Length: 231
Image (cartoon, rainbow, N blue to C red; front, side, top):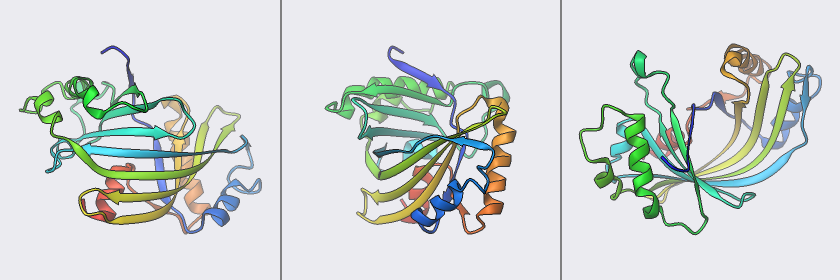
């Protein structure tokens, strides 16, 4: 498992917003939900996420998401293999990591990392997938590309809750049909230990009360693409 990083899935929420400029101003207003938070200076970047699967979406059907993430502001990209199923894990597996990541050279071919992806899948699904993971991995293709133009802020409350607010203009493109869908999204991610989950949920709830026009979306870009583009 050399060079692999294990981590838990992020705790967050994605909200469809109406107007990036206006909604950002309202959310960041010192008179609103952030009046008791310290707000960092903005960070602007872009990221391209490429989701891979077999032509019949074998891995998605088994709760596995595979993506490469290409960053405009970093020297290296990464590959992410994530267990992300609507079916909850059984209790004795619930404490296993949900996500494995590995650094990726910007010139690397995806085929160079087949072994890593197969190994990560076996770590995430110890019972196996009834197939040879390495054999099936070799048939994957790009199925969805998500390009994100992001403006991010880190906000910190004095009780320890830390949240990253990412105002994004996202373009979802199906590699199967060529169809595209553009959405302005506010991605909210907890940047604190798990003990702050309840405080984070309350933060999102209060934000929804303040900004009643925001609409909750699926937690994964893959699932959003599936919903709007019928992958």
